[in-house]
Length: 295
Image 1: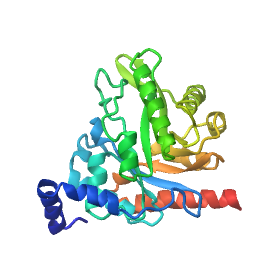
Image 2 (image 1 turned 60 degrees about the vertical axis):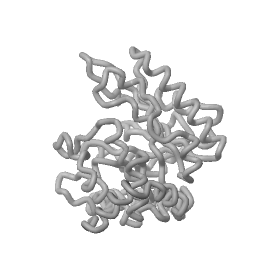
Image 3 (image 1 turned 135 degrees about the horizontal axis):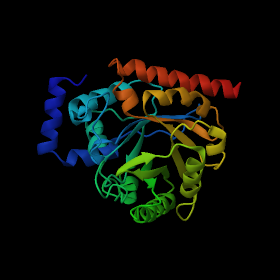
Image 4 (image 1 turned 90 degrees about the vertical axis):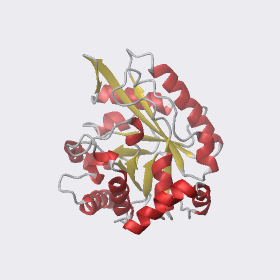
């Protein structure tokens, strides 16, 4: 929990000591991207900057910033959690709360495709830039690449992602690309979760940028992991989602290109409210699955 005193100090720093943020970036103790286990387990909290605030049946759950930060600190307190994925505001608050030492920090980059907006697929880069990720000593940059054949907004997003991948690779920094195929149906965006659509998205994302040397993929757990993940050699992380997706995690985590999990609302806002238990269960699944593969 964040004590009242710590919360007041955070608010005071925000108002009176903005320079403390640059100092906190510079002072963060870093660690290798992959630890001895060769896996990566991240908690994600970049949803609010895209206007996606709903969780656990509450349409504005993630709008409560103190609650969100408390949940993130609970998750990060588990030594099996390697780090966090977030936008500048959240990352900087966690830094000021001393929650990111010896953790991997991935900066979220394109959050301009606001949830439900007419221009949602034209996903502008409105958060971290490749330059700022390097300057602030972050461990990688994440970008969302939604592919919609009927929406021309896909093209500028694709180009922007290619430029970001190239810029990060030039600095030797990981670029995490999340390719998701969608269709518009009656005005709504619907994720295409079939193997053909997902494999196509994987191949598009794998070829983005001047080099793929530092590219990782962030992908949903497919019903047929071999058909989807067999489309790439790039290291990949399985994203979290609705409760039903958990049944697919174990099978997907066994695929050799998969290196771990990136999970947000599923763990931060579990139905029973027990964040620590939800995080521990996911960590246990990742650990046991990888031990089986190594045996």
